[in-house]
Length: 129
Image (cartoon, rainbow, N blue to C red; front, side, top):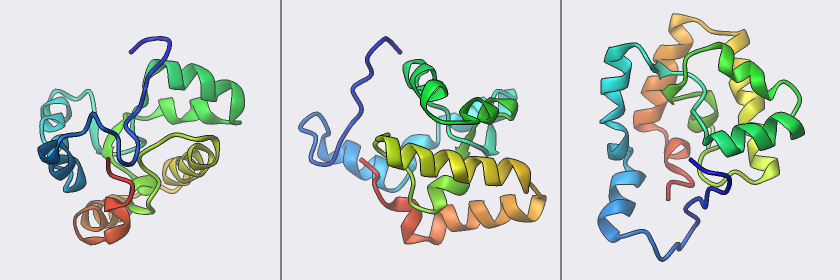
């Protein structure tokens, strides 16, 4: 965290071959299971963002802060629809729309679908860098 968070981008020279593979297949998320077991996160929910992004997008996107009324998740409705990765204004608006849909329509069945789609859907692996 900090005032400026430089996110990874497509073809970012900071990303190693191993890091790319871990991110592409969501293996880098496995340590988050500890946070799920501690009760700090959920398997499914809106993905957490850097604090500087929260401050920025709370000013730009209506209802952005509503995402914070539920536990953050390792995966979510936005991710299985391909809205992960860089946080430009359009992608962030779409991500928030999907997060709000999830919050308003939560069900155990929806969570099961999201977990399954996270594993098998090519969309959930898009923009992973």
